[in-house]
Length: 362
Image (tube, rainbow, N blue to C red; front, side):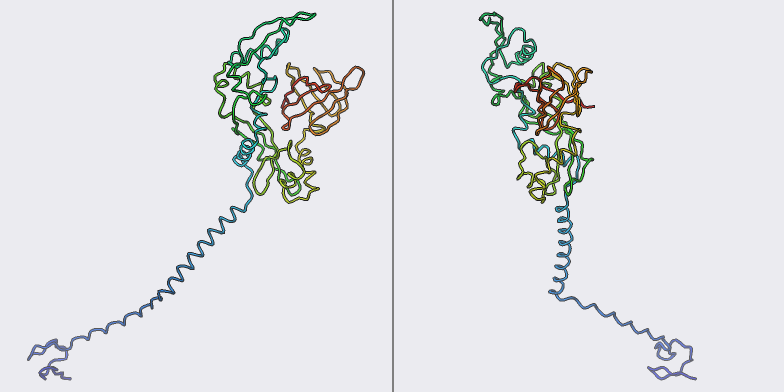
């Protein structure tokens, strides 16, 4: 079928591309219709968009705050750091406890002069150490006079010695802190209370100048109540934090408050329960002890062993004091006052202190 140019009307072949008369393009393929543009997403109104952002921020804050609150409410874990913190805080807050560790009390240091009999070589040797450290002047030998004449040595306190005094005590440093601690891996449940017995090795801080420079520093350190600077302290988780329980000064009211939400009756017996958990067995003095002269004493639940000789005895305990009554004629009763941490003890007879003992640990 003939086809005609739409511009000039001239006939052209069906497959012609241009009109022979006017040159207009014929039989051109129709351009495809453009695809409809996708519908635009309607923009959120400004107020609605702000609400979404605020809601997202609030949710993030709630999540973070919830995690922080859970962390704050969680009880402190038993660890070297938590035990060290608790012990350091205890030592920093209690001057009396520090003085027991840092001060010498074996002589009346507050006196201007100490007079020592010539035969008392042990005391003279000790004071000679303090002379070399500059705390005392060189001793002066004098006669005592009287019916039985005997010489004695007079040690006069020097200015550095006066500066080192705290009351009647001679102190080697102002502070002490934990260098190493153990026991945090042996926590026990005592009823609803978590407890542990910490063993801490301490180090001195802010040492006195005379002590730091003394040629006999090691010998002086050994004369401290805890010369090895190792202490054993009962710990308890109180108000979600580990704290030291002060056995020596804790009253029933303080015990009830410190041990938690227990009743007053439970609080009164808590310390005895704690002692029983960590006791050495029998009474507080059970175990081996070394006296100042070097001999070793051993106390069992029913006997005293001195240099391999065993003597039956009756033990009566009141607090930290153990009264020993040996069986047999001629044996005198004596008291052993065990320190709060169980590391040292004092033997007294008739109210007079005889010697100091140091626990021998296996």
